[in-house]
Length: 327
Image (tube, rainbow, N blue to C red; front, side):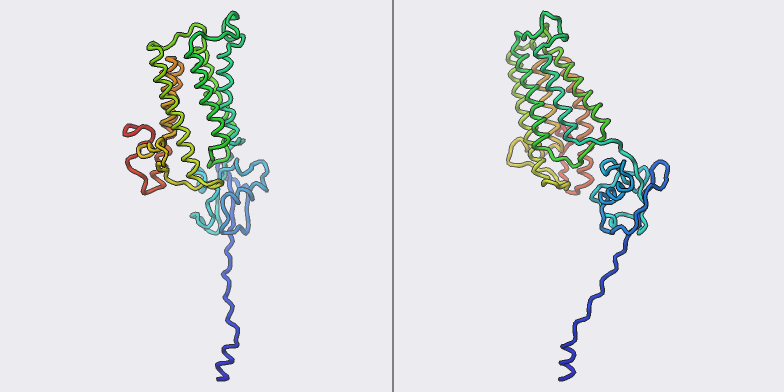
């Protein structure tokens, strides 16, 4: 009995804590292979985003958004949320750095891209001086389709601006600053080209008159509502501050049912809007803008469709990138 009581009074043996194995991280220049930074005693659960912040302390000119950290000099950039111990590296990890150049926020990019066409189109609509002959300064068109086209064009870009501020959630916070000049040239240039001909004093309405204009207006408004519905559905798919990706599915909103057949219906509706605007104005520059936009959106849609198929094994097989059963 005494022996049993003595054993019961003994304190339980303390569990030995496992020693934390720290990582050593060296960062080399992807082009020259020169060593740029050596980080000692890095926690195994450190993320690439945290490593970027450590690297930034020794190289202040390269803030985290400007850094591309890779496992291979010519490989893909690692994601900020990737965890060090889950990567195919040893306790002495070697990464390669590339400078992405000066960065700018996506919100700023979109606000700049979309404000330009809105303002530029209105300058042509109001026929400010130095655009058309002086006798037409601040005059208005006699064709009601010209005024309708201005309202539709303005509505489209006001919608885009409001979506940028209140709807869209961006998985990447920034983009290279140099891209804004290319994007603005595209949007602003096409807006000026279209607006010049639609608001020209010699502009003539569509061949089939009011019937053609009304059908075009219905197509335009239908697709604008559809595009907005898809943006709302995609926004609700991602919680605030999260970068998690999920398969988008149709909701109770009928405009989202196109998800059954298309991976990127926002582009499908966008194309429909500009087809409607082309039919409404019967203007060649608008048709060319629609064609160029369709080509670019097809490239984006195919890329996103491929990433869905790669990431989700149970991705619906019937879906096409942008046009049901076609493309």
